Amino acid sequence: MLYLRYQPQRFLKVRLERVGIPLLTAVPLITLPQFFMLKAWTQKLSNWDNFSLYEKFNNLMWELISHLWFLVVLVVLTTLGMLTFRWLRDQQRHIDYQRVGWGTVTLAVMAWALFWCVLRRLVFIFQPEWLMNGLFSIVIMLSLFYLPFFMLGALAWKHPPLKEMFTRFNPVMSLGAIVVFIAYYANQRFSSGEGWLYELDALISTLMGLCMLNVCFCFGHKMLNSHSPRIMYLVNASLFIYLVHHP
Image 1 (cartoon, rainbow, N blue to C red):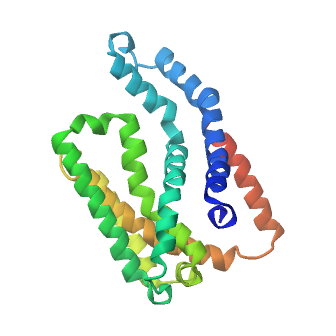
Image 2: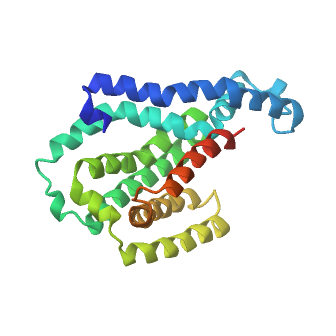
């Protein structure tokens, strides 16, 4: 929406302010004190004095980013949006979105998830220590994982047929959400990190994300798309809960 409203440079400035300021504010107010609490009062960082300089930096990155990983990913995806949104705009000349259905979207997103799995497996084989690096894991791997959903949101905003597809009830996607959740639970329970846990998790989570997009959007559009004081109250209450839940 902002990209369509502003010039690209103006979009980047406005969006990075909205995402980056909460991130930069939360680090000194929340995750930095949290780091010192963990260091002083728990065994998690008990060997801090024996860590190498890299180990100290890496652990600090994990703890400072912590639960704020989604803001870091949004900063990365917003910056990438300067390229991805332009590419999507160029592609719309070749795609008839009236004919795009769940099958096409699912195949495209799952193909990207498969690419992500291959990339992770190659890193695991040749440079496994990268996966323990906080900046690489969040800035590179998580950003790549969520990139198709970021682009899909932009496309749904721009093209009404896609939005209608998401907000229209689809029994296959609803049933799929249940089946894929069971698969997700089974993978978490019975797979191991030395095996294919993370690759299977990526494929299952991607498919579950698509199914839940339809479930959440169609029921939300049907039940919450009205001017109701009760709904407004819940929205306002949820904002307060969101602000205080991490501390």
